Image 1 (tube, protein in one colour):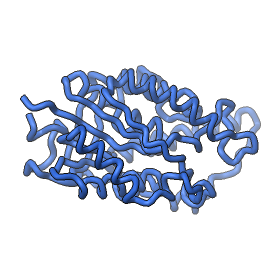
Image 2: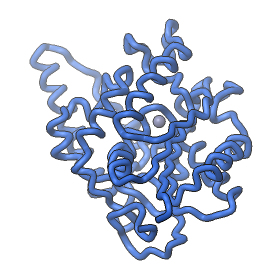
Image 3: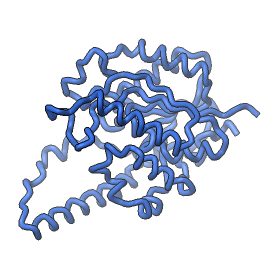
Image 4: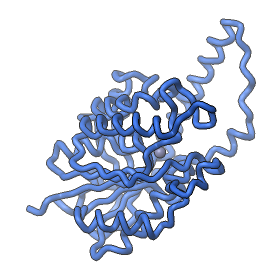
Length: 286
Ligand SMILES: [Zn+2]
């Protein structure tokens, strides 16, 4: 039988765990070859002391070094066969000065990065490719750029893989929102009990949050990751320097295993002519 290969294009170290950690581990367990392309080094992440990139002593190169080791650890946990780092500098959030760094991923011409990615695709010939949608899932420039180079690279190769975007269905997003609001309420109550008064949340900011959910009927694959979601948690936890505010870590491993039982994808290209929502991202190939 033909070797099955999966390749995902991710923006930063830790994205492989958060949006496809379960899928990676599951596919590895099934004997599928798994490849990860990480576009940036994550220089705009938190420093070890929690400092954000706008802090004077935040050293992006130092952060990148730490994150490189964390990524290696996550790759081991998820059983990923090959990691390719494109090595671009993290562009930061939209509008940050890091966007304009000539070495940033955002400043890199799409065709330049796409040519590199196309070379990898031609080598690996994955049947299934995954990245983010054209909004980069939540509007981060590096995620948007990952989408752009993936689409451009697919136009450069001589075969047509099935492309999926990671997604969270609206119905699931509603349960996350309820949980976030609950956490905020509890925090406010705990603060109030200690006599701390926090500034009220700015309602306008709230409205500007991008709509992260995808209509349920647009989901093209729902993958049951309940057999491997402990590994997904461990891979998230491997990104030690970045998890201080993590929703998942606050949940704890036990509850995470209980709750985070699926990953969802939108099918973007459909060379195998699949109908409706499938439960296997390699549907049509095995
Ligand atoms: Zn990211």
